[in-house]
Length: 444
Image 1 (tube, rainbow, N blue to C red):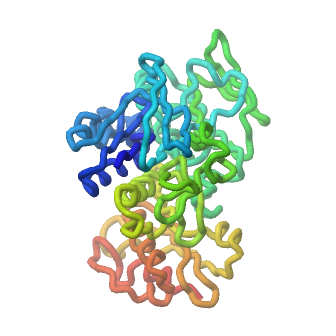
Image 2: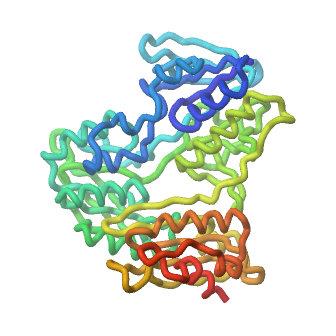
C-alpha cells in the first residue's frame, strides 16, 4: 500500500508515525515544502518573549529521526495538484524547480493554514512580521533590541500572547483589534474583559473596534500605523489576524467550508474515496457543535493519530474520533484563562435551551498562604442540566481545573453530578468544596 501524506508539521507527521507502526507493509511518504517537520508553532510567542532560547525545543522530531522509523520524507517539495481520478500527486522540487509526480493508494492532506495578510498599504515592509515560522521569528527576535514601539494587529491567541510577552520586556505595545473584545472566539464578554485588564496591567494599550488602514513607511520601513481612529508610532508591526486553510490548489475538487477548510467525517475521511485530511486545513468533528473549523495543535495531533490507523487498515477496522471540545488556554500577565466546550454565544447560535452560572470562589483554604479568586462560568442545558461548556479565569491553579471540566463535558455529566464529584483536597490545593463543585452547585 502506497500512503502519501501532504504536509509534515503536526497532523501529517502524526499520521505517518502511526501508519508505519500500524501497517508494516505500507510505504509511507511525506511531502513537505519546508526544510523541517514536526514543528510546534505554539511556542513562538514564548520564544520571542525569552521564555526559552533554543528553537530546537519546538521540534518534536527531526527528519532524520523520522526516516529511521521507515518514513520516506521529501523536504522542500510543494504539492501543486492532485488528480483524484488517477490517484496522482503532482509536486515541484523547490530546490531544482523540477516537476515530479507520485501515485498513491491512500492520500492524507495535512497542508495546514497560512496567516491572513490583509491588503493594508505598506504591509510588505521589512519590519512587518507574522508569527508562524521559525526563520522570520528568529530574525525578529534578533532585531528586538533595536525596536521599542510595537504595534500588534489582532487580538486572538497569537496577538495577545505576543503583546504580553513583549510588554514584559519593556516594549511599548499597542494592540489593535477590530472586534468589540479581545479573545472573543473562545471566551464570552466577561472573560474577554478580564483578559483585557490582565494584559493592560502589563502595559499593553488595547484599542477595540479599531481597524488598521495604512502602514506609513519610509524607505520600505514602517514608521507608524494609521487606523480609522488614530495613528501610533511603530518600530515593528506584528500581524496576527487569523488563518486561512492552505487548500486553494484543491478548490472545487473536495467538499469544503466557505473558508476553504476540507470537510471530514469522524474517521478523517473527505468527500473523495481514499483521501483523508486533518489539521489546520480541515474541519474538526465537535462533540456538541457538529463539523467546525478549529485550528488547534491538540486536535491536529489527535486526529492525526486516528487517521494514522485508518489510512493503513481495511475499512471495517477503522476507528472513529470521539470528537473535540475546542479546549484552549492562554496566559495573560499574572493571570491565566481556559475555555472548553460551548461558550454562551455558541450555545445561543446553536439554538440550545441553556442556562449559565458564573461565580468567583477561592482556589484553596483561606488559612493557606496566597489564596486567590477563580472565576468560573458554566453553560448547561436548562432542563437536563447536562454541562455544555466552561470558562475559567484566575492566577495559579486555574487552567488545570479546566481538565476536570473538559472530562465532565466529554462524559455528558450534569451540573448536579459535578457538584458532588469527589475531588482531592488538601489546604494548599483546594477547599473541602473544590472550586468546580462550588460552581456546579450554583447551577439552578
